[in-house]
Length: 147
Image 1: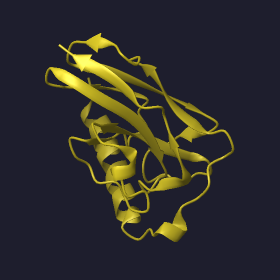
Image 2 (image 1 turned 90 degrees about the vertical axis):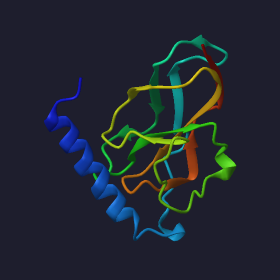
Image 3 (image 1 turned 120 degrees about the vertical axis):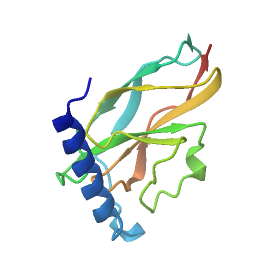
Image 4 (image 1 turned 180 degrees about the horizontal axis):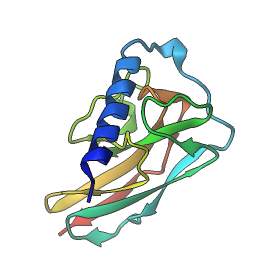
């Protein structure tokens, strides 16, 4: 359970990241280290689960830091839910929606309340401004079923 302090820190980090992102342009995208990759620890591709769905996110070759915290080779996770990567503007800040979940507090796991059905999930790791690295640091796309 999140404390009021944790929620406040998360909100401040997210807000700071969004304010900074407003000034970012495509030319500001930075390259990730060679071999950097986001991946799912869980759930696994093809799994059938009940809601809420616990998502555990992994990262290779980089570090995790909250949004708004500028450190080399770090960023934070975003989760694309039924949103293909090619439908995301990688040159702009990623707005929050039901199809784009932010983990701006530097979280590496979280729960999703999902209605029954089939879902595609893909991780997109972005910098402190919610801007994609170039090339993007992404996971494989997985499909899950929620009963």
